[in-house]
Every structure is written in C-alpha cells, then in structure tokens.
Image (tube, rainbow over all chains, first blue to last red; front, side):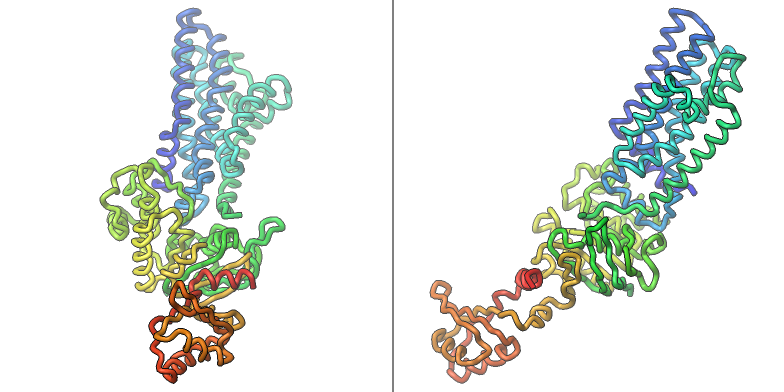
Length: 239
Length: 303
C-alpha cells in the first residue's frame, strides 16, 4: 500500500515548489511570536493556550494542511504529469495512500514540531499545554491531509477552496456559529487536547467519543473516495 | 504480438459525441491515426491507454479490457501529448522513477536512454530540455519496460525536422521489431512518411482504414490526377482523351507537362503505357499529383 517511488516524487514536488516557502514561514512566525511573548510577558498558561489554540491550531495547521494535502496531488493532475504514475502496474489506491502518507508527514513536520517547540518556549509545557496542542496538531494533520488530498483530486481550485475552508469556515464561521464548530477538524483535534491538558486549559465544543469517530470517518472516507476518483480519473483530452 | 481491439466503441461528453461507434484492430507494425484537430483522436488514444472508459462498446488488449485494469500497463507504453513531466527531475531520475514503478531499476533506465540517444543530457534537469529532448525522454520512459504496445499522441508536435526524422526512425525500428506502434497526427506528411497502415477518424467516426494508396484507389468516383511528361505531349494528350478512362487533359506550358484527370484508375494505368507505345511516344515522367495523404484526406472529409 506504500510505493517508495511515488513517495519520493511527491516529496520532491512538494518541497521543491515556491509555494513550499509558506511551509517554512508559518512555523518560523509562530516561534518568533512565542519568543517575543515569553520575553515580554513571561511564562503564562493562559497566554500559551491562547497563542497555540488561536494561531498554531486554528491557522497554521490548516494552512499547512492545505499546502501539503492539495500540493501532494493537485498540480500533477492539473499539468497532466500524473499520467506517468497512472500508466504503471501500480494500484491506484496505493498511489493515493502513499501520497496521503507524504502529506501527513509533511503537515506533521511543519505544524506539530513547531507547535511543540513554541509550547515549550511559552510556558515550558506547564499544565501539559505544549503536549496537548502538539497532539491536537498531529491528529489534525492526518484529517486535514486526507481532506485536502481528496480536494486535490476533485477540483482544479483545490487550494482556493481549501483556504476558504481553513480560514473562513474553521476560523471565522466557527467562532460565530456554534453549530459550525461541530463540523470542524480543529474542534475534533482540540477534544483530544482537552483530555491531555490540565483542567480548563483547552476547550473544545465536541465530546471526545464524537470527535474520535468523526476524525476516523472523515479521514477514512476522504481517502477511500480519493482512491476512487483516481481510478476513474479521465485525463482531459482535446474536448 | 499484441493487438488492440476496439469494438463498437463510442464516447460522449455530456451531449457531445467525441467518438462514434468505432471498430478497429491495431496490430503489430506502425499505424497512423489520422484526423483533423478535434476529430476524436485523443479520445480514442485515451481509451486505448486506459484513461477514458468507452461510453458503449469495448476496448481490449489481447482480449483483456483496458479500462480499470492496471495490469495492462506491463504491455503498454504511453507517450502523452502534454509537456509536463516532473520538470524538477533530471532526465535520468525521471526515467529511473518510471522504471521503478514497473518494478525495474537503473539498468533498464540507462538502456532506454541509450535507445533514444539522450545519455549525453541525462544529468540535466528536464526543465532545461528542448521540446525534442523532452519528447525523447518521454519515449525512454515509455520504452523502459520493453512494452509490446506503444501509444503516442501527436508525438511530432513542435519538433524540428531533424528531431522528427530521428523519432520516425526510432518508431520504424519499433514497428519492425514487431511492436504495435500507434501514433496520432493531424499532419498528413508525417503519417504518409511513417505509417504503412492508416486509420482515419473524421468527426468522431472511423472514416477509412488500410493502406492509404488503396484507400485512395477504392474511391473510384473521385478523379485521379497525374502529371505526365513525354517526348510528345500533344500527341499523347490526343490519344488519351479518346479513351473513356480519361476525363480531361490540360497542357501545362509552364511546367512542360500534361495534367491528366483519370476517372477509371485501373484502366488508365494500363492504358497509358500502351497508348504511348502505339504512338512511339516516350514517357519521361508519370507521377500521381494528388496521391498525397492530403488529398485522400480532404476527399474523406468532404465525402
């Protein structure tokens, strides 16, 4: 179910593009802000939670998920180079699952690791806050990668749709309409963080069982459907 | 020996019919798929390459369906029309990746690059390649697993004459080795020079199949034009026009030749030498002036 050649091509395509700069900029920004906050205000659990929840989990993880998830397959479908992967005796679900692994690995590396570092800078993992948000980032990385990978196989405008989802739905709409929060990868991931962190440090609108079920269903469903899309992918001909 | 069988295949997109009830068999040797732009050539090649399902009918490779069957790619090599091909890789890295996806390795990649004579540039990034170099690396990637079928969509597009000749030589070799080579083109000279067997697609329909000279001859209701030079053009013209196989003759003073329109191809070709001999006229040139694919094609389009 994993093809090292597909993985190698995907890594190089993902990290070699100009768009990949955002992968480095956002985590760097998080760490710079954390350093500044720590220097100005000292270690504080509330501030740490606000910054990690408000910037790392709400903004950075979904944005990196969009870039890694859609970038792992979208450009190849757009420019037609995916034909070189598909005209091989390699099962299409293997191609999708390999690309999902790569997207997850990249999203985790560029979101969960900086979140952990930022957490330790902010309050030295007081109240397990750094670990809690890192786990949330790891879990969210998986779900976002699967969702945005699917988006990359469905639409040519995957990046735009992904950004709208990440910024408008998750960040803006979610904060105004309580119902929208139930259908939010961010809230599901935070449900896990809530369990890990000290009392009252992290809050989620979704209960843990519901969050876990939704995460598994969305990740599995998105991956399955992306594999199906790829099996019946018709490359644009002259028509 | 591998054969692609297309049986009553149609493909439509919404209510646009791109390929309309086409039945053809592509066997070993070089076959040209000819038709004007938008005739449905790419749709047909995409169906043969497993990238499009026929809406009705079947497309098979030696009796096995091609659609949704990744195993057929062990025998099919595809050279797509589109340019994009992981431009950030070097030529060698690209062909090695293609080899690995077939379960092969660097040795086969080197052999394929040698076949297309691209070893000299194999360590350069593909983004620095010219159109012809790209085409050859695409060929190498399609040949790396030694497939029995090679499908090429508009392979000569944008190539300069020298590159075109090199690729034609390569495809001739592939055909002579007993591979089933199918290439599409809308340029008649290309098909004429390379393919002995031609399939013509016009507006989604299979308009003609076979040797193009034979196709031309079968259309006996169309006049055949010949350019004839002889030792006595006017005497020859007078003798020819007396026979019903000749519909018209023009004495082209500028060319110093006769332009003959024959309506009965078989009869005219036997008549001409007999008439010349009977009148002691020496034939200097007899050349079919419209036996080019272009004219065959325009007849088929207007028919």
